[in-house]
Image (tube, rainbow, N blue to C red; front, side):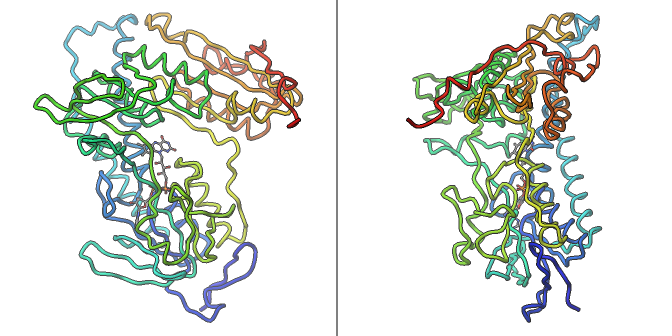
Length: 496
Ligand SMILES: Cc1cc2nc3c(=O)[nH]c(=O)nc-3n(C[C@H](O)[C@H](O)[C@H](O)COP(=O)(O)OP(=O)(O)OC[C@H]3O[C@@H](n4cnc5c(N)ncnc54)[C@H](O)[C@@H]3O)c2cc1C
């Protein structure tokens, strides 16, 4: 029986070109995006298969697991460790709240790691079950594209299976890359960092991105010595500069040693750990050196060159607004396309793909006002434009509202650490273009603010919203006076 499908609004079917395919859709990669697209497509009535590498907490070209990076070696295990690390600061703060912590308090890394592994194994099973329940056929092995409608799966025992599919979806994600320095094999990536047997009492981290600062907070919060090296003056390039400065200050306040403008030159194995040499002539000893130096799309082993699928210079699969590659039957979503590399974005792309191809509702992912968070301690969360982006794009004046304050909890605990909130407003339309917060619970608060921005909220509407008292969140609706106006007139309007 032929199956009717809508493709970009046009009626089509798995047999309308006279060919009978094994599946309507074959998904390569069972991470956030792939699983979402497989389940939703099956929900629209498509016959769907998916392949994923065998499970292992540390990924390789041959190991992965259903659930993907987010669940097995990304967002979820990281957040578990952030929760674990947060107790360090909470215990310090508790003393001035009257808690007599008389006994020596120890942290048991192995215990937390064991709990973390139990949890990711549980989630891996849940992902497999979700696929089965949705009627998706799962295969374990490495997928590779052998033609515009052909997929080959190499199973763990090296046997190969071949399938035809009307549509192929590449959802293979990305992997950590290492810098090319002597001794780089002595360092680890975030995969191993989430599965270390021993707690790293002396950690060196290279990188200024969100993964680098998050691991710095994790290990420091658990009592380790942490040295963080990055190329720029401040960590978190791409985020609002004022927020970056506050994050840097807070990281230092929590005892992390920052080394801006510094790179690692060489790692040397010694009896006392890893000797780390920097390009500023410093030398330090470490138990662990973490490279958080970026990720590359998993596109190399998919045979895409032979099939003619175009990649960009970074190896990301090139797609149009609907996530379709230059080969009409092949699509790609998630980190392998290197658009915005976040789990909820991969989910959005997977949903839009299913709606477009099988749901009869052509849907483009919307990259406006995508909120995100950096789970350092305390965290940073942003949505919309940073001050720098707003000024860059401004046609008229930009109003900047800021509130920097000592969170109420710190008045008793005595912790010296500021929180900051920021709103970026278009002076002419009064529309809020961006919001940012650095401080406890920032991601929980910013998620709500993101809805307001998505609805096109104005500053007047923020101001007319009643606050929740006493809370930090109420600062977002009580920023009455403008901190500064960046005059659009000061910017050249033409090239003359
Ligand atoms: C340490 C860390 C922390 C992170 N924290 C956050 C966070 O807090 N919030 C957030 O939103 N995002 C976070 N991310 C990013 C997030 O994990 C990714 O954006 C998301 O997982 C991308 O989903 P995906 O489906 O594109 O790829 P993935 O989830 O990576 O899934 C791809 C899957 O494809 C499989 N695969 C690869 N090649 C093949 C093949 N040839 N055959 C079969 N299977 C294959 C892989 O094994 C993998 O399971 C984090 C990432 C890392 C590394």
